[in-house]
Image (tube, rainbow, N blue to C red):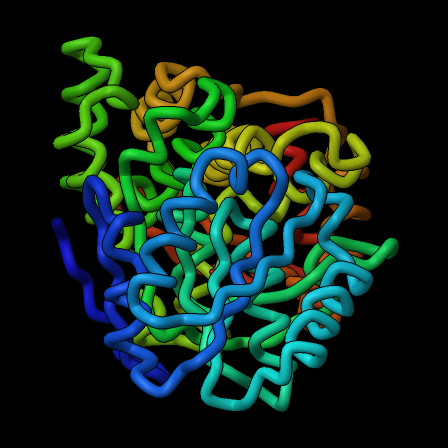
Length: 360
Ligand code: GLY
């Protein structure tokens, strides 16, 4: 097992390893010694597989367990679901020392975190991510929230968890396309900040091992991503600077995702965004073309796309509607060489010129 410490507005540990669901109750008890009641938030598919293990483990530690199970999918990520969670907690008489746990992928951990951040002005949450994407990104760092009809993640709060419990055995049951989606975020860390992760992913590509089934390797890879994210969070918890480098590929990726009415999965769109931004950086002369080829080759070798039919004009107008925009300026994340990235501020006109280098 790997334990990564995150020291932000709250200090907590991310536990990554095999078989951890069975000790989830013990970890929750350690971080919330006074809690009497626990609300487990999960979705239909995940609950079928994993709810019983977490519930049993929590009950063995004396928690009175409540459940809120929503229909799997992004369309559930709304205020009605949050109101449902508030309702369960209010009826059961939760107090400020009680606890919420988010068991599932990013939709679940975002909503469980937001319900905890807002109920009684804030109670503890423990995140128990079961997808690769949630383990390496969504569950760590305290971004919580819901979607509005106008856009994704438009309402939310920064609310750090009290612990994150990542049982890597859950990765074994992920459908291949869901696993590949998570790999989009794993690759992102390699490109923006972690050359040794790039080397491991490259070596695996050469040997052709199916990493999804290699428990030892997956624990190591997830642990490296969590350490990278922790490092970023500890230097910029509230997303005013360095944390924005985690958005590599997202500026264009989000536009592709929105234009598909969210039918294209997030990780697939981010992979396309990373490929497109890399091409644009080559055209702008800030990324050597052999580095861009290495980036795109590695993305492709993990079964992800690097291109899209989006036009430069669509990319600019979509990016200008993104919530990540500040004022009239876009923060575009560019990789200068593998393992190193920077934030470049661009006006809409500058972004059009830049992105036309790839999509023109
Ligand atoms: N998912 C990007 C972040 O946590 O900032």
